[in-house]
Image (cartoon, rainbow, N blue to C red; front, side, top):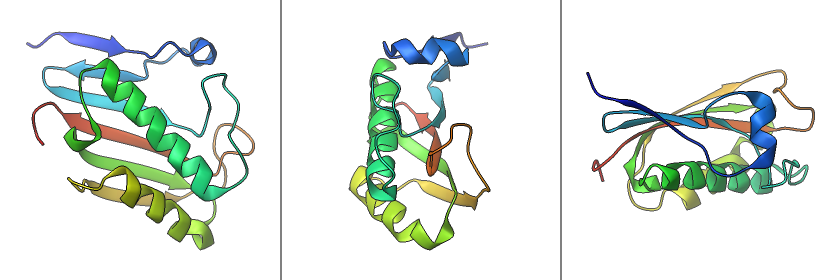
Length: 130
């Protein structure tokens, strides 16, 4: 059986959530849902596009800890709180994946874990799949 390894960027705020930002088993990396938090743990704004860009920046940082890139992402699942702002999220997603477009699902939810969060995205990556 392949080894299991946790990957966690050095984000001081992350310890209070008591999760691994990603867990790798073999070549597969499961990235926990990433919110629009800056390195200090603050929600970046109340703008869907800016929050979405931060979410993808956080996914990029977590993947880098595992030696992966956005091109290795094969599937994402997005949770948004306002379907009418989906186009803003979608534009940020297109920026985040200019080369290899992953499979994608989007779910509308009433709210997310922290007040003010408009978007959260989890990802599945496979090393060398690019």
